[in-house]
Image (cartoon, rainbow, N blue to C red; front, side, top):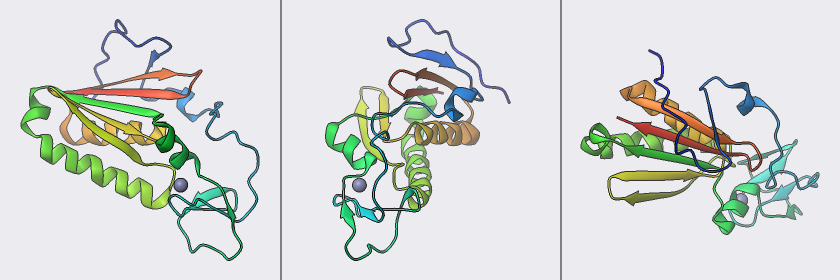
Length: 172
Ligand SMILES: [Zn+2]
């Protein structure tokens, strides 16, 4: 089943539409929250307890004498500056909202257990639309794809390369 692509009309400033398999999401892009130079190892995030070890943030026992520095995910949460924006709407969504949000949280948990930097920041319900914000663009994409896989509907992506922000829109 293909994904119906909606028009780019109305895309937020700085964003352009990309396809689901666009290589841009795999490129290494500048991300202010990740470009902080090399951290000493081990480093522990005092907010969430994630440990920077062997070049990446992991959930593990906090070593003695670890350096302390806030991880990029907690930094974004503190700044209220999400990387991913997933918008869910439409009559099917409204009729199945609880079930679909359950899937959203399950996907997040699965990702977060492996990758401490992939987290949901907030779930905001506004009129008939639910907005899920994430600390990582790939998490927003993954949740959108999981919903689309389970329920079909229309899924599209808009990417802002300057800021490394991704908007994912699902309507059904
Ligand atoms: Zn943290």
